[in-house]
Image (cartoon, rainbow, N blue to C red):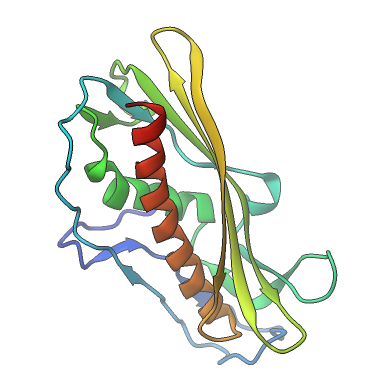
Length: 207
C-alpha cells in the first residue's frame, strides 16, 4: 500500500501515477528517462442527504484478476490481444491505488455508522468486496483512445451470511490524448464515476 498524506482534499486521492522506465521502446511517443506523475484532485465530500445507518461497513481490500496483479499498463491496439507499454508503468498495482482512493474519497461519503478495514479487527454488519476485472487502454484505427474500467462489487450481510446485492460496473472513458498519460487521466475520470455510482448503488440495495 502507498501512504498518501491527507493534507487537504486537493492532495492526491488517487495517484494513477506513471513511471517512465529507462530502456526499451514504447509503442507510442514518449519522453525517455523522464519521471511523470499524473495525479487527480478529489472533490470534497458532500454532506449526506440521509441519516447515517446503524450498520458498520467492512470495506475489504480491493482484489484484482491475475492480469492486473502487476504494475504494467495494459492496452489493446489490434484485435483481442493485450499488450503493455514498454516504458510506462503504474507506480503500484492498480488495485492498491484504487484501495487507497476508496478510503480517501468514498468512505467518508457513505451513510454507515462507520467504515472499517479488515486489519482493524472490528465487528461489522456489512461487508463490501471489490474485484478489479479490467483496466486497459484501447486504441482505434482513427487514432482515438479510450480507457476501460470494470469492477465487480458485492455487498454482504454479515449477520445473516447472505449476499445483499452484486453488480458489475463498466466504464469506457475517452482519453484526452492517445498516450499512456492520457489513458491514466481517463482511468481517473472513470474511477470518479465508479465511486459516485457505488455510493448510489449501496443506498439502493441497502436502504
